[in-house]
Image (cartoon, rainbow, N blue to C red; front, side, top):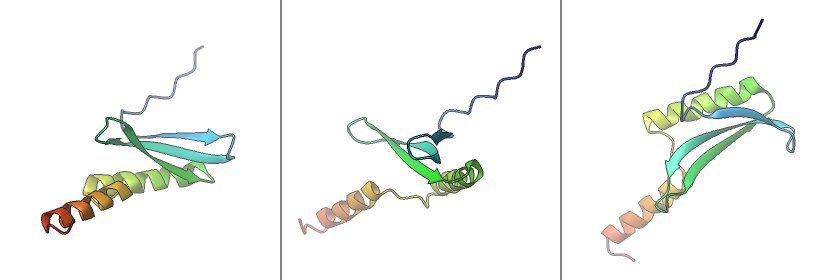
Length: 88
């Protein structure tokens, strides 16, 4: 009798896996694409799969509510403000 396969995650939900090199559980989630078309990813590291799953859930919640800000967005925002004030 065949065993059931684990259902596939929905695109963009992130993936959780074990890294043999780092000996840690890791998760990656896509943040979108930059201006050059290169995919941006966020990597989350933890000791247990449940810990990583919780951290991934927090990052996804922050992304959906608008609280998550990457370092590139902060730099772009500062440069845009300076350009608007003609300081550069």
